[in-house]
Length: 147
Image (tube, rainbow, N blue to C red):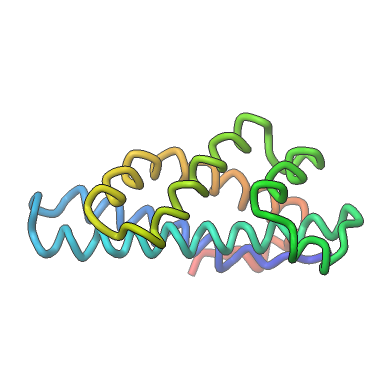
């Protein structure tokens, strides 16, 4: 099975750059708020893309599409660990990322952004590792060339 991890890789790069620009902006400025908003949206998009790829990868282990589509994300993460796509420690961290992501439905304010900013460096490391693993196992290197 082939998985195109290129979009996830681009989202990770964008998220990294958004964080750098946020940290470099004047505290409390409109510019910093723009970068904060980009981080929040990028965080959501990166997570959702990672989950879609993880579901697709799990099909290679005999899990059916219908079943996976109705399986809660936290169970998808557990299945990822069962098949060696994630470690148990990573699954625990992904649970925290998912819980934080679910808060966006209720709070797009500064409190959520601050919590997300605390989680973001670890999230970037974990999602990069997942992207690399999925690319190495299910992708082709030519499709991962930098944009």
